[in-house]
Length: 295
Image 1 (spheres, one colour):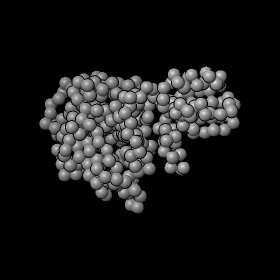
Image 2 (image 1 turned 30 degrees about the vertical axis):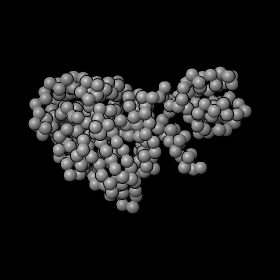
Image 3 (image 1 turned 90 degrees about the vertical axis):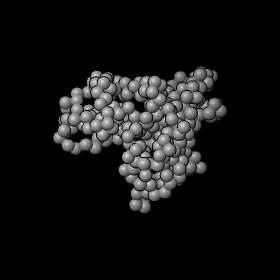
């Protein structure tokens, strides 16, 4: 069954087109990531799914329910972690947790106690006293205590420590495996998507460019920087590398294949002055989409 289906969705802000005729399907029980740089429409899409914004054209459904007409019913079983905490009242976190549970006709105190302990969160803290880290942890717990069928997370690790981010993804994967939770991750972190998600779609310049099966990847995408003065980089392009920069001083390549093949190529060319690092989403967009559009 499909958890989310987006059909020919278009959104404009004034004269600016945020995205146009995008189509996307998230399957029930999968960990799916929508990857996009800042300002490309991730948050706008999330707000449309929760009926906080209306599209100019197209439609979206969650578990076969229309996101506009059936918004109230959808919110009963779908959790949402927004990029920013929206509450402004001088109120304790514990009170807000109770309100959330009451709205869902739940008394899920055991789950709340577990999550408070798991994330080390103090429920007595008031909203104005919260740091950005506190606000994000609060939002995550508040979305999870209702035991959602689907959770949509907009940049959930922004403001978290590395340890907290790992704990979050470990818990999400546990819920996915044990309870069939469907997860939609909206992020600009390519490495997070490649480390944890089943599939990813790339939103760029108002369009869904590709959908990638991340489980099929041998390793995470890499950036190779070569500082040695070599005559040609044909050997690298032959194994699938994309050229980002090619000057006598430095050659920058994007590689998303088998690292053993990359290592052999470097060794065969006797290159000893180079570096390999994890790619960013901006690097991937430059390698695959920006250059393609320029051609």
